[in-house]
Image 1 (tube, rainbow, N blue to C red):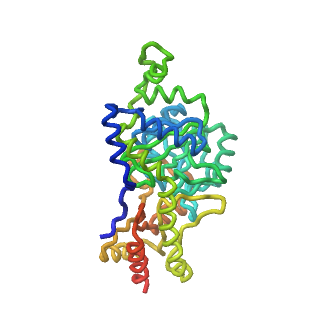
Image 2 (image 1 turned 90 degrees about the vertical axis):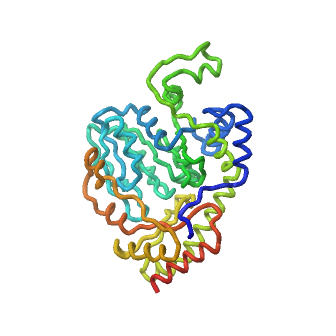
Image 3 (image 1 turned 30 degrees about the vertical axis):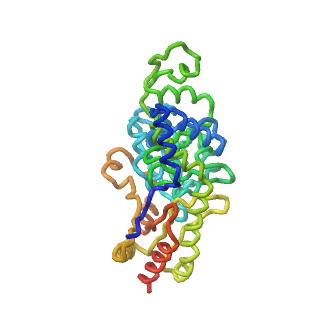
Length: 375
């Protein structure tokens, strides 16, 4: 069986985990946590980075820092993972879903302004498959209406929009280091902060509402409970695993890009014949080969193709069920405008096996099996 995903493993993870154990410091913000946060800050140029226990929690922290209150509205695409909405629903906000562009599967920037009301507090662009949303227009709309921009860049570490790292363009950005992502710590994420004014509040929220970070820096003689917060610090063992990935970040990027290009080159012939639609990457975007997806003509064809792949021991999957049609989406959110593309495109899209060090033989088998279906 060719797996859909295998978590990345570069070979030094166990050594780093053993080092953390021998240092007798396996809780949050130890040696490897700090190395990972500093690495992200240097790589992306963000003002400050905090490792978190998940991308979901990074989004939750963003919602708190943005002052999201019950009744506020937050604009986002419906074609996304539940965490994008959950982080704001937990604060009592209403997700306002906007249709997507059929080319990139990202939120349609031209429909955002029509969704803004007096209750709107933030825009949450989701960079699907590591391909950037049209951030120039989105930030211009946000500036005009005095809204926060909170980037859900869960799939987008190492991706860029006009030379800028995704996750660093809005007020806040979030990365995921789940086992399905390019760089992994099993479960984990990161919050990126653009403006210095939010850094101290983020430290307090992340440290259970205490000024513990100030205590460790010697700025106070004891730490106290100063505001509400939670525990968003990942274990040092997880951070040690992630640090091994960061040490090989260029190798992982190049390896995944090679696999992505191998797929893309092979399927161009099927696109010419009209059998499949391949991913679209705008010229001003640099993606990170997070996933390789294609689209069939319709849901029926996709179902048959996925069954065909499974019959040949290849695990291929479809992706999100649009949030606005899910039970919780109907309960907590609303759709702005017309669902012209979200549902239609979601029913056509499927994802091929894609992970670090997938073999050429496995890629060739996937390619050959897809071709055999259309033949």
